Amino acid sequence: MAKALKVGLAGLGTVGGGVLALLAQNAALVTKRAARPVVVSAVSARDRHRNRGVDLSALAWEDNAVDLAGRADVDVVVELIGGSDGPALALAKATISAGKAFVSANKAMLAHHGLELASRAEAAQVALKFEAAVAGGIPVIKGMREGLAANELTAVYGILNGTCNYILSTMERNGSTFAQVLGEAQALGYAEADPSFDVDGIDAAHKLAILTALGFGTKPNLEGVGIEGIRQIDSADIDYARSLGYRIKLVGAARRVGEAVTQRVAPALVPHAHPLASVMDSLNAVVAEGNFVGRMLFQGRGAGAGPTASAVVADLIDVARGEWGPAFGTPASDLVSVPAIPLAPTIGRFYMRLTVADRPGVLAEVTATLRDVNVSIESVIQRGQDPLTGGVYLVLTTHAVVENALREAAAHFSRLESVLAPPVVLQIMDL
Ligand SMILES: NC(=O)c1ccc[n+]([C@@H]2O[C@H](COP(=O)([O-])OP(=O)(O)OC[C@H]3O[C@@H](n4cnc5c(N)ncnc54)[C@H](OP(=O)(O)O)[C@@H]3O)[C@@H](O)[C@H]2O)c1
Image (cartoon, helix red, strand yellow):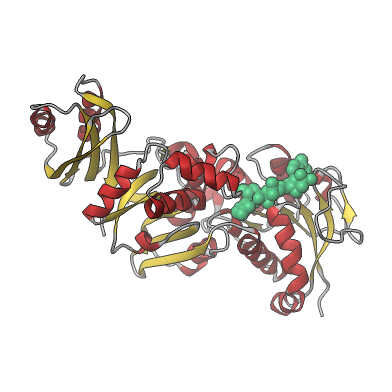
């Protein structure tokens, strides 16, 4: 049997604990698949004295995680601390500089510093692996980097944040408001005390920036992602969407438009028959469309100790086998820039909900404005009342229109005295 791969593990929280548990429970199987044992030799976390429910007495401890990189009994460092900069980034750089492989679940760091880390890893000829950083247990990084490597992709998109999907699914199921469901999710520990990374779309944007780089051979560019979260979604929108044949999902999507690639995270109306519509609760899913393979769907658990550890240890098995190569599938020096402007003038179908004063002439005023900017209306529903303003809801869906024209009209509506709340504008996804 070849000698063991010795792991330095930084971070012993949800995912770090899961990695220790998996390596212990599946040790024999991991050894067979890796053709050598994979053993943790040294660990680091903030609090040395915290009871973590596992016996760490046989493992070396480092107070400063960065010191794991230089240890003689560490061949590969696994970073499960989190945060785009700080100790996680310092540890990544120190590990690669020491000529060792680096495994991480840290999407924030990879979205911000992925290009620099990939360049350093390739120069040092060491592995940089991050299967757990996107969609947790779903092997979408490997699937795209290896399984779909022969394809020109036209689109990669998906449900990349389990907390948002859980909130939207529960709002639909229980008819509750966003604030109610968020409060319940926080009480159950499904949502963070500060939920903004999740509900404002930032976490999904981190993951999308990574997927875009993999799918299109572009430099990871977080600034190039147009980001909208789900706070503005009302249970009325979910009801209207359902009656129109759609479900509202937070979708992160990268699409090729001519020579450019657009990246956007925003809630969208997904047709009931689309595979993403049936992805409920905290599940994640990613769709990749390739010119030879067609449409692929990856679906599963995007978070939690078990699924995330499954992805981290898969990376460790790759490292144990001696596999390394371009972290984003394309050599870092060949990755091309994506334009910083996220939205080329998009053409698509849209849903718009207006809260308007209940008096004659408002509908006519709205439709006339839309006609003037060349927005052609597919359907209009006028029913339901806003409990806050007492106004009535006017819900429109459009034919394919230039998005900017619709956004301009929406901005105009929000200035009208007869429009009582900011318009809600959502893209309608094609089947
Ligand atoms: N949770 C998931 O389901 C999930 C899914 C996919 C990806 N991820 C990613 O995985 C990473 C870890 O997430 P998590 O949920 O496991 O976080 P977590 O439960 O908060 O654990 C973080 C760990 O990092 C340790 N830590 C914090 N600062 C440190 C420092 N300066 N030096 C050394 N250790 C430090 C903490 O130590 P103490 O325990 O002593 O406080 C804790 O053990 C993040 O990048 C996250 O985005 C998580």
